[in-house]
Image (tube, rainbow, N blue to C red):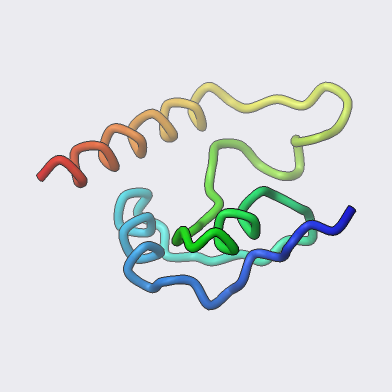
Length: 85
C-alpha cells in the first residue's frame, strides 16, 4: 500500500512555533513513513516531532530516556499554553 509523503513545503509558521517551543530550529529529513502525509493530504498543517531518537526506535529493546519524556511533557504544556493565549 502506498503512503503519501510528507511534503517539505509545510507552513513556516507551524515550524517556527514548534522550533520556539523546543528551542531547536533544526529540520530533519528521514526515510520512514508516518501518517503525516495523510494529514497533509486532508488539508492539515503537519510536522512530525516527538521524544526519543530514531537510533533507539523500532528495533529490539527500543526505549525513550526519561529526560526525553520530560522534555516532551514541557513541549506539550508549552504548546497548550501558547494556543490558549
